[in-house]
Amino acid sequence: MSQLIAPHGGQLVDLLVAEAERDALKHEAAGLPGWDLNARQLCDLELLMNGAFSPLKGFLGRADYEGVCRDMRLADGTLWPMPVTLDVSREFVDKLGPARRVALRDPEGVALAVLDIEDAWEPDREAEAQAVFGTTDKRHAGVAWLLDRAGPIYLGGRLRGLASPQHYDFRHLRLSPREVRAHFDKLGWRRIVAFQTRNPMHRAHLELTFRAAQIAEANLLIHPSVGMTKPGDIDHYTRVRCYEKLIAHYPEQTTMLSLLHLAMRMGGPREALWHAIIRKNHGCSHFIVGRDHAGPGNGSDGKPFYGPYDAQELVARHQAELGITMVPFQEMLYVQERAQYAPADEIQPGETVLNISGTELRRRLHEGLDIPEWFTYPEVVAELRRTHPPRHKQGFTVFFTGLSGAGKSTLANALMVRLLELGTRPVTLLDGDIVRKNLSSELGFSREHRNLNVQRIGFVASEITKNGGIAICAPIAPYAAARKDVREMISQYGQFVETHVATPLDVCEQRDRKGLYALARAGKLKEFTGISDPYEAPESPELRIDTSEMSPDEAVQRIVLKLESLGLIRPRD
Image (cartoon, rainbow, N blue to C red; front, side, top):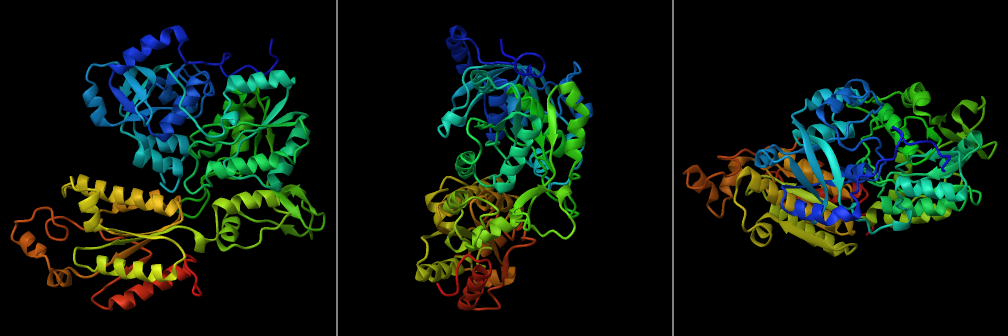
């Protein structure tokens, strides 16, 4: 019998149906209304089905949800700090009618589970944000998702699983709680300290985790989140390669690496408690909680959302109930005189402390600057440089927006020629009219269709940017929300340079070679931007250009200078 810590709630949940029942459930799922899961819901579904979220047996119903928001407890009193809910659109609920079962599908349409609906309700998401995250400020990544992206209706109920989401990467490291526990049993490990991370690990992390294992007299589980993390984080492919390099620097047979497909909420103290429960379900007896655990950064007021040790305080209050022991740690800093790392509270007066923040590390990567060995290992730096080359070698997007006739296409074509002359990267022009003809010919000019057209342009540009090319986009893109979505889509791969071609409406009308403005004024052309349909001017674009005040050559030179100032091209190139 295993001597590992018991799962939360006493039993490890497994929601996959027995093989004998699977064919019948698949047949039933084929005839049910289907909901296509987004990336976050796929993460949640996987951890519900494999028991990482024990004792949950499905997405939270209303009573459990309200208890979790109010006092971090399920309706039966079990400690649980984070809502795990299935949010859907109002249109989907209307189409459901009296149906009480839903097939949950992956992006390819494969049914992964059947949800037996027990509750459907419209939550107060602002109240949820305040209760769970302590704020409604959208600078908080979890709040932004909840208020801007989550569907308005929650469905709760028990799950019956057909198959886990399919992964093709790092399969040898993607272990379920049951598999991790079996590995611990096989090795005879009884005391295991877990380390949660969403970032690459460097020498400070190695020192912190090694010390934590020594203090706990335990083996070590490096357990990074590789599902959804904070926008702008380094991709998990790069991170996992870095973890694999780092593992070699721990004493042999002491440390294990396993990946957790968790969609983080960046919820600070509540998230830290949630992480502790998840590691308890994996069989860990101890859990490291560091400074600003799962912190989302600063709010709109420039201040951190949470105190540096709020997470430690919350986990400490509940560790006796959980049965998992917290190992608290302060920030680890490199002391030059000692040539080693030490906790922040052990630094002596007069000692020289060296540190490289995450922002500074990214700057050094972007600018191709030296990263010293006291900070990280050369093989880790090599992995980071493979996928994060200097900024002048990265892909980027220049996104022109403005009224019809403002000069977007002229500037886009002239800029394309200038960048092709440099010859440093492939350049692709996505002009509004050309995209309408070749990519969006079936779309009209309603707000919905305009947004869809811009999203398509953004998707193509993001792929170009991701693969190191330069995308030049020149749609009208009249709506701020659609441009914001495109910025977020592209910014995860490279720089997004929004350029508002702010030529006045009267000048655009005078230039109107196609006679479109005249038709719009006469009421013969409906939904025309600037006349019968609004144009929402960007509030803070990277560039604002009025082509009535400068020639195309002057405007393009200004854009080139901006790209140089951002480090995207070099003056000597």
